[in-house]
Amino acid sequence: MSSGPGEPTQAAPREPAPAVQPPKEASRPLAQALAQNMHAVLVGTFTIVASVLSAFLGYYFAHEDQKRMLALEYDKLRAEHTLEISKALTRAEASLMAMIVTGRTSSQTYCRLAGDLTALQADIAKVHTVPKVYGTLSEMLAALDPQIQSAPAPDAVRQGLSRRLQAMKSTHDDMDKRIRADWATDDEVRRLLDVDTAATMKVYYRDLSVPLAGLAVEYGGIGLQARNLILKNGECAPQAEWDAVQKRALAWSQQAFELTTSLGLALSPE
Image 1 (cartoon, rainbow, N blue to C red):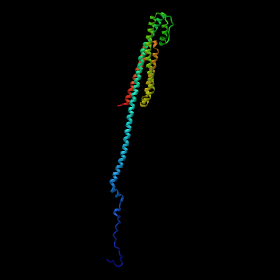
Image 2: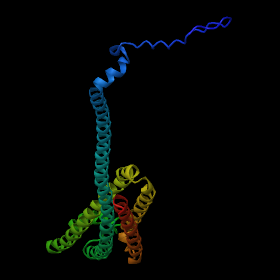
Image 3: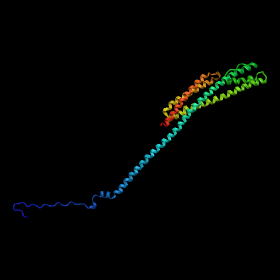
Image 4: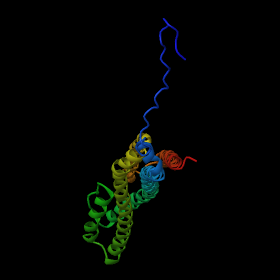
């Protein structure tokens, strides 16, 4: 259709040119690669994560097992040393009681020996004029033998006096051996409480180390009191003094028992 005269000619509208499409095989190569290898990627990722998780769990459980084993070993050592502490306290209690029993017995024995010795000296003086012997029982017993041997008396009289003296010497020596054995044990126990047991307590039961130190000091005090009484045996120390020592030792034993019980509770609180 032609335009009229004087009218501008209008150009026909153009259709939009189609967009240039990239080749199909060249579009989104990364996405295509992922799509094609997704299974392998997932398997690889899972394998890596599983390996890391397995290594972590292995380290964690190995560490926990090691801690558990160390705890069990420590508990075993603590139990063994708890037994050592209890045995030391029990041994100390037995040492105190043995020393007191020996002390009481020796007190009675030496008191009787002192009387027998006085009587023997009087009988020797009947047959032989000699100076009176003084000193400890052992010194007096040793000094009487030459007096008897030098007495101007019949053999039967001298032999009778000598037999009495030898019997007293034998009784004295036996009692003296018991006392020395008890004192040696007492010395050993005091060293045990002051050093080995005290060190063990500080390592495994630090809170109870002070009560143990108090028991060790009291143990030494009771032992010293008993020894002083034994040294006075020739003076026939009254039994009331031994009763006081025994009462003190029994109180010590009760405190030691309570401390030992505390060790058991600390070891197994349930």
